Amino acid sequence: MSTYTAHIDSFARDALPPPELQADCLFNLDALQFPDRLNCATELLDIKIEQGLSDKIAIKADGASWSYQQLLEKANQIAHVLEDDMGLKTGNRVLLRGPNNPMMAACWLAVIKAGGIVVATMPLLKARDLEPIINKAEIEFALCDERLKDDLFEAQTLCPQLKTVYLFDRIADSQNGTELEQKMQGKPTSYSNIDTAADDIALIAFTSGTTGQPKGTMHYHSDVMAMCVCVGGELVKPTSEDIFIGSPPLAFTFGLGMSLALPLYAGATTALVEMPTPDNLANAIYEFKATICSTAPTGYRALMSAGKIDLLGSLKKTVSAGEHLPLPTYQEWEKMTGIKMIDGLGATEMIHIFVSAEGDDIRPGAIGKAVPGYECCILDDEGKPVPAGENGRLAVKGPTACKYLADDRQQNYVVNGWNFPGDICYMDADGFVFYQARADDMIISAGYNISGPEVEVALLSHDVVQECAVVAAADIDRGTIVKAFVVLHESPEDQAKLIKELQDHVKQTIAPYKYPRAIVFVDSLPKTQTGKIQRHKLRNE
Image (cartoon, rainbow, N blue to C red; front, side, top):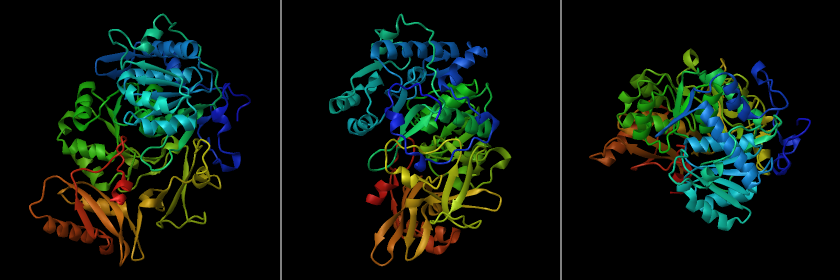
C-alpha cells in the first residue's frame, strides 16, 4: 500500500482481501513503474490536452462527435456535480448505468477524477440483478441513462441506502435537459483531479454470466494503467490514427479497455455503439471507418453470417475475448477479411487480457503466450508444474491481480501467490498456451476426460453449423455424456440423418469417444450481454 490514501470513505480498502490471500504482483516493464500518486483519469484524458490533442476527436457516436477538449469539459462539469450537488466524498461508490455512449464515458471519467469508485453495470440488468450489487458495494449515488431509469428506481425501493440518482441524456443534447445536464450548466469546465494513490481503488467490476451471488472485483488506478500498458502498448499497439469500435459494454472490463481506456491512452478515437447487433456494428464500422474492432467469437460469427463483410474494409485489427475462439472461426475470419484475429484470454478479476499474441506471433489453435508484463504456467491440483503438452490449471501473475470485495471465494482464486482463472490448458515447449476448457466445462464420460470446447471446434468445422455449445448431460450408463446444442445455417430436411452425419464428422475429426451422443438443434444459444454462451442454462435443460 502507498503511504496514504486519498479516500475518506475507507469501505472498499477495508474490504480488500488480507495480504496472505492476495497474489504476488509483477512490475517487470519500464512502463509499469508507476508513481505512488496516480489518477488514471489524469493519464487518460487531462495529459492528452497537455500533449496538444485538444481538437482531436476522442469519441464518435450516432449524432455526436466530441473532441478531447469537449470530453474533458463534460467530465470536469460532472465531477463538480458529484462533489457540489451529490455530496460525493472520496472513496464513495457511484453506480453507472447506461449503454456505450458519450455521456456514459464522461461519467466514468468524472467519478475517477473526483476520487470516487466506479461501479458500472450492464444495461440489461433488472432491478433484482442490481439489488445485490448495490447492497454489496454499499452504493449511495448513481448516474443513469434516462432510458434505463425504471429498473434502477425499482432497485432503489429495495436498497434505501441508494440516496441520490441523477439521470443523463446519452449525448447531453436533450431539449429540456435531464437532471444531470441541468446541474452541469454553469459549472466550471476546469477541475483539479483528486490526488489519488496508485493503489486507491478506481472501480469495482462485478462478474457476468455466472450463477449465485455476484463477485465484485476491485481494481486500482494502477490496474487501469497496467491494462493500457500491457494490452495496449504491448499487444494491440494502436496509433493515434486508429478508431476503436466494439460490442462489449463499458461495464465489462473488456469493453472498458477496448472502447475507452486503450483509445484514450493512445490518443486515438473510440466509436461507441449503443446497440451493437451484427447489422448495427457492421454499419458503424463502415460509417466511422473503424480500424480496430473488439467483440466475442459469437460476434464475429454473427458478422460473417449476416453477410456484412463488405462493410468491414477499414478494419486493420480485430480482438476476440470473452470466451474461447474456435479455430474454424479464426480461419473463416482470416479467409473472409485477410485479418489474423488477436485471440485474448483474460478475466474480470485480472481486469483484462493476460495471454494472447499478435501479428506473426499468432499460432492458429493456440491462444498465445503470456502478454508482456505477465507470467503464466500450467500446474496440477497440488500446485506443481506439469510437463509440456499436459493439461493442467492455468496460473497467472502480473501487474494486476484478483481482489474480491469481501468474498470468501478469494481463497479459491488466489493460491500460493498465483491467480487461477479457472481455465484448463496445456503449454507447448515454446510457451504457447492451448485452451482446453473452463474447469467446469470438462466432461467426464465413462472415465474419459473430454474438453467441451474441443468438440465444439470439431462441430464448427462442418459447413452446416453456424454455432454450437457442448455440455455434460446425465446418463445412467456412462455417468455423463457429451450433449451438443447446435444452431444451423438452414433447417435440415432430415434431422436424424444430419445428427448422424455430424456425429460421424466429429469421430473423423477428433478421437471417436469424444463425439456428442446427443445433439439438439436450436434456433439460438443463450448468451450474456457480453456475448458469452451461458452453458449453465443448457446444462439445466
